[in-house]
Image (cartoon, rainbow, N blue to C red; front, side):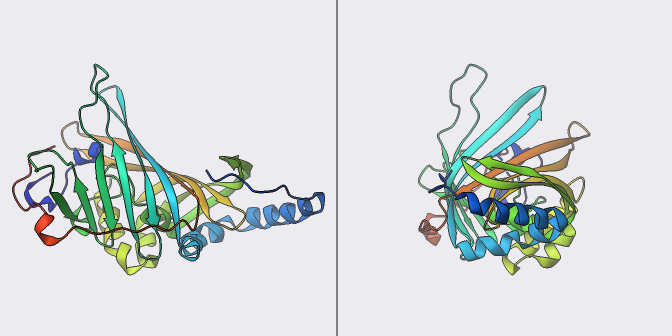
Length: 278
């Protein structure tokens, strides 16, 4: 990351549940079939509405993973935490990749997600361990969809507002919860036009900064229309390799309604010195 965190290059990209209660009586199967039929009729609308359903849900626990193949090696960053959709704030603990010997190279990275900002602790790169790094997400070429090593769960959902094409695949389960599986493609520029004010600038930046504004995805929505699993493929140009690199981001949501409290760092706890290149 460059000094002050004003902009991240492609190298930054590398840093870059609930159990169903009760059983449905035999008589409810017809209703589910009818819902599935409607889901197949207008999948684009169902997906574009998914972010608003999350706002109604209020909050959730989340697990994330981000995968990128580089130099013949697949690198995966995993995260876990909670997210407040209405406040658009979250906290994640990220486990960074091991080195080739299997030993951990970094202590877990703590990230706080807030409207327009990303805060990182245990960032390394010369940052004192008791200090936070703050990054303005609108200044990142990818809008922080991949730079932080985890896609902001609500920003990931807001990408679905730009769904252009989608098909209903089938009815399946995610962690024991019945879901409807959709597959489609979203457009980041279109998503930015419909996004909340907090995500508009970030998605606009991403639409310009990625190799393509088109985002293929697989989305799994439960019977309330809430996203349970979302897998997206982002593409950026690696200037050093001169090629397009794919990054796969997966977001899992569960335990909806669990209270999530995120306390942002005080100004004196934010590092303002030089940050070494990643």
